Length: 106
Image (cartoon, helix red, strand yellow):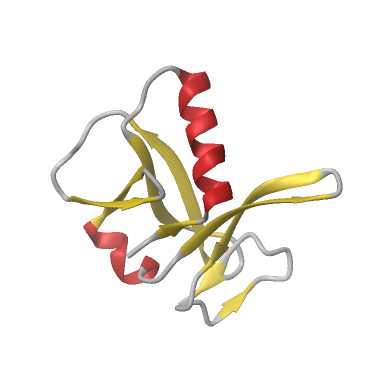
């Protein structure tokens, strides 16, 4: 299960509205960085087989079945700290993060 906080859901709703289309978001991982994996958020415009749909705070969250093992229990939040803002990923499966915080290991 992937969960969006209320703040993250509001931000995604805003982005989808500005974009003018989209079924929801696709949450995944890619191989990159010094620790191995990084989170990927993309708009999902059509449903493809091989994806599972979760719903959280009114937003459809798509996840490739191959990525689910990395994302079980993931919570996505939207944070604003001083002049910085962005999505924050809280994953109980993470063992470590690189120093810059861009990649992680499971």
